[in-house]
Length: 114
Picture 1 (tube, helix red, strand yellow):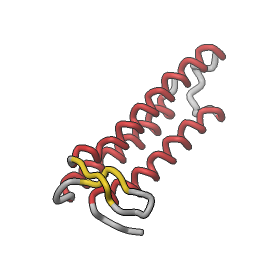
Picture 2: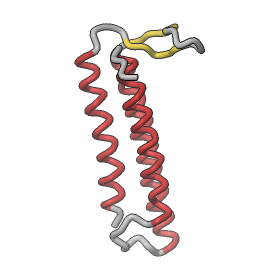
Picture 3: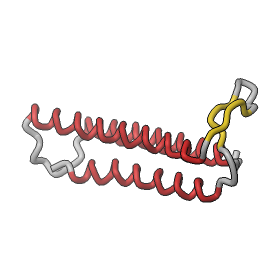
């Protein structure tokens, strides 16, 4: 009964994947893969590199869901249809990765909002 947690985490995944696909369409050439300490670009790559941050987020969220299911089974709370207090840390971690993706992916594609 972890449907709410799964919906929240997978919704965050979907949002970042949609943003990445839009940025892949907008990007006109190679994307930035690394900046040096002075903020200068010193490595570029294919547009497909924009999917790296969403993939990290998806892996993080799936591991979080697996671990939350394991803890719930161990504690006997697997039938509670709410997001438990200790599970909100997974949502916060996913939101941190979402914000990082929303800040850095446009910069990789050549859009500078900051």
